[in-house]
Length: 258
Length: 275
Image 1 (spheres, rainbow over the protein chains, first blue to last red):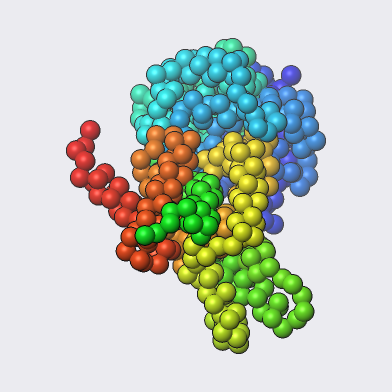
Image 2 (tube, one colour):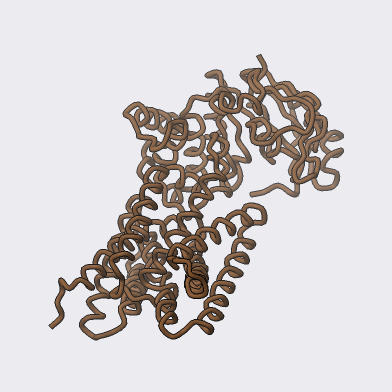
């Protein structure tokens, strides 16, 4: 089975065509990195996979299901880690409550917490190495700690597919490495991972596929097939610096965040 | 010697209790990043109350001005929330500023054409007097406050999630728009309850200042909610005491105590040794 299969996928936002004729097929389980310049449609593709956006034309299947028709089933199977800057720091939430969110959201109001919920939260915080942070306020954590907590929240409901939108923004190299280790561990346990990032230099050797998106799929496949100077230049033009490096070139987009 | 168990004071004690409950909704407005909204809703309520009194005056209809005030305040916050979802935070601010201007303009116009006896009633919504509440006012405010608190208790988690991470909540399948509008509706109702109790001019002091004070001191959301209610009770009863002892207007006294608690908290935090 494929984790994601898109065919002729076109998505419009406010009348503007953000994705056009996207054709994509990703094995399950696999680790895929989605790259592309700002405005390429990376977040739009993630939201379409989640069923939050409806395609104008074409089709998309997530674990064999149409996310717009089977939205509840798909959302139960998909964990999502949004960009950290979308989260409000006005809310003094404890780490364990942030993770619990993903357990309670599937219950009916008033969504009582059970012992199994507490055990699941404890287990997943232990898995991401953040068990000692359970009673800390989320807004007081470092960027890397926050990202681990958000991953814990996304995986506490045991998804089969994990989507991450720019998890490395504002994160130090050590935390990036720890997060990559977590994600590869998840993949080895049967979870497919799709991660949006601007900087693939440090993760190339750990991922199965790289997808270069710019409104449509420019290139997709093994890192060596995608990270070619001619391919990258065709999308980024002068907005990229490419450094010769074996086995893959290192590239730094000039419009990258963080 | 003041009779501390006089009917006026007992109603005022109950009103402060109701305000403590309503101030919890003020906390939600702080968590949602729209701390100014209850005060704007209160001014919309002022315009609504003015229209309610006017309709009752020029027609034979029996209209409770407070019902119109609550309706105006809730519709204003829901409308601001709706346009804000389309256009962002700046549009919310613009919409609320427009509602404030409209509310105050309607108040000024209606006040000009009302007879003196009705002007007094209308002015009660502007400056308020917690010591002049009638039994029927307390009954109405109690019903609305209990309704607010029931909705809040039932959908507490949803509201917190929508405030914390709307995108993540939507990805998990929550109807974020619905709960966002529920928050705006409650803020409108809370603003109207505060208007009737202490007057629209000092809603900030009794609905928002306690919430902001509590946020500075709290380690968790539940702690913040409890502390907000506690600060409101302290400001309400402290203000009443000040009013009785120094023969000052009750609303203003309450506002002074609430503001003093806020300023004192901020000063204490600033002067406290860094850990």
